Length: 512
Image (cartoon, rainbow, N blue to C red; front, side, top):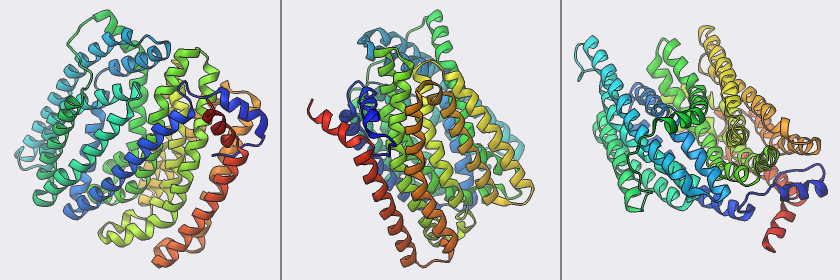
């Protein structure tokens, strides 16, 4: 669905870079995950809206901060689970999946122990904050950290089983779980927040996670047992440790703007709560990119296990990037013309956080397009390069956000700095992964595809916002701008389908 400068040779190259199970199976999985994600995102938007009606900006800022620490729990296992999961995908490509089962059991053991240690640390910090504030039950942060101490243990088990399902390309069960979690969060967690505030949100989230774990057990989650082998655990740490550090750096990179607001803003809770409105728009966009990458990530490892060829995996990632860019460009263009006026009208109390969305959305596209490149490096055992790129991006984002806040440029300045760092990270990720492996014709195709897929749509959206700013537009004008974006995107997608080689690839796979 993307554009190619030279159709005939690149069509053959695209076919040779197909996943082991073929593009049609990949597309079927992507459509399943896409449909599920759209449903989850719709419920996620409803959840976000309900939470912002139920909580004031300061309370929302506390919840945003606590979610950061909940996400960091995924990196408390020293990388054993990541090493075991990567070994599983490569073993599947070689037809030796049984050989990876012991690593999964070892990862289960380390996950359990490490999550308990992390929970104890959270509880200790909660007690320390509460004691300094005059009572653990009177401080919102101590209460929240105590709740997280319970949530992290359940979360680690659920996320590890979901990782195994995705490695085995069992996307149907994983998608059903996502729908269950979204529906339960909307009805239970958000409903409890509406009735009882932050404490209700904590209790509701606990019930949702417990339900997710029970659902996995009911659907026959892969049975894991306690196991211990020090040498094998050390080996898995050696494999997964760099991936863990890269993941931790990437998570910090994606949240550094929020952390800088918490650290450097005079009214930190209020401004972070307002900024979360822009994150609602950019986060949905990155969520789509991550969704598309979920179906391709295991296939990179499988392809490497089958072929052992770095270049084959890089070419496969480059082709997948074309599909991802086509999907992201439409949502990015629509978000740029609609996010500010729609969100600003829906949440006048959060209006301060609407304007940064216009700047965060292009950065979210760049961050999403970096995923195939980083996944390619992980699949071919070069994850240390991913870590280096994430650290460079983190430094740029931190320095830019700090400069924006201390110079008085506010939340818009933070958004500009963050988006600029995301674009730099994308360019660096492609340079150290895809660019060094693919040949000159494939490089030309990649650059042409990215430019012709993204520039017309995002450029039009930016021009429309410059001439008719969204904050000053009526809703009919917003709809007209959105229709213009859709028309340009449709033309770009049609050109890519017919002359980018994808139509030919699709026909060839139908004949198999």
